[in-house]
Image 1 (spheres, helix red, strand yellow):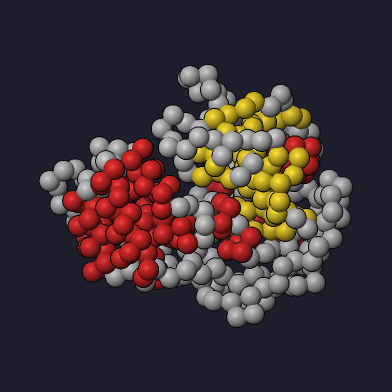
Image 2 (image 1 turned 45 degrees about the horizontal axis):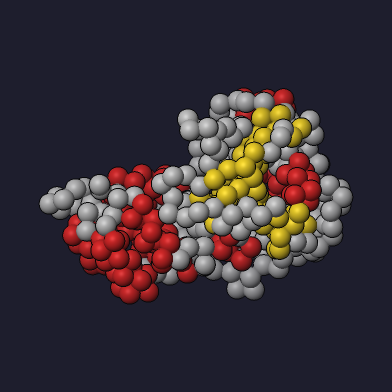
Length: 360
C-alpha cells in the first residue's frame, strides 16, 4: 500500500495554507500590549493573569508568495534544498512511500513528501510525537516494519537535523475590553478573529500550544483565557470562513476535573448551549495506540445561525472531546481518566460510526 497519496493530500493542505498567508504575518505590529488582562467574567474562573510577554527579539514569520512556488518557499524557509528533497525521495521510492513499487517520483512529488516530513520532524522536536510513534503510525498505514524503520532512521539522522524551527509572527498590539459576545451571539467558537483579539490577550503559540497540539497547517493563534488555560487554534484559509475560528483546543497547564472542563467549554459556546449525556470514545481500529476520550455534544440554536452565515453546513450543535493527555493525528494519547488536560471544541455534533463506537 502506498502512503504517498496521504502525504500529498497533507502537502496540498499545507500549500493552500501557505498561499493564504503563510505561518503568521509579518505585517502585524511588532510589539504586544503586555499590560492587557483577561476579562473578569469568564465562567467565574481565575482570570486576572497578564498576557504573556512577547519575545524580546521576535523572528520574522516564514514568508510565502501565494503562487505555485509556495511549497518551494516553505521548504526553503525550513532549510531544505532540492538535494535533500531528492535524497528523501529516493528513500521513499525504495520503501514504497511513493506512487507505487517500481515508479520513480518526480521532484514535485518529492517536495510534497518533504513538506509533510518537515512537519513530522518539528512535531518530534517539540515533543508532540516520538520516533517510535512515527514508525508505528507508518506501519498502521501499510508500511512493513523494515520500510518504516528505514524512513524513520533517515528522517532522524539525515533530514530533520537540517530543519529550522517554525518561526512565528510577533504578537500584535491589542486593545482589550471587547464584548462578551460577538455580533451574532458567539462567545469564541465560530467567532471572528477580530472578536478574539478584542477579548483575550494573544500569547506565543510555540510556547503555549506546540507540544500539546502539534504543528499547524496554516496560521496559528493562541490566547490566554485564564492563568492556567490557553486557547489554541488555526485560522481557516477558506475565504467563506472569513477568519472565524470553527475549531479551538483549550489546553490547561495541569489536569482539571470534569466540572472545570465543562465550564471552560461552555464559556466559549453561545449562552443557549446545553450539554447532552457524555459518551466515552476510543481510538480508531487503525491506530497503533490504545487510548480514549470523553465526548459531550451541546445543543445550541445560536450555533446554527453562526455557521449559516459562513456558508458551512449549519447544525444547531457543537461538541467537546476531553483528553487526559492530548489528541494526536493517531487518536488519544493514553486512556481517559476522568481528569482533563485538553478539550477539542468543534462545531457540529460527534456521532458514533457504523460500528456504533465513537472515535477519538
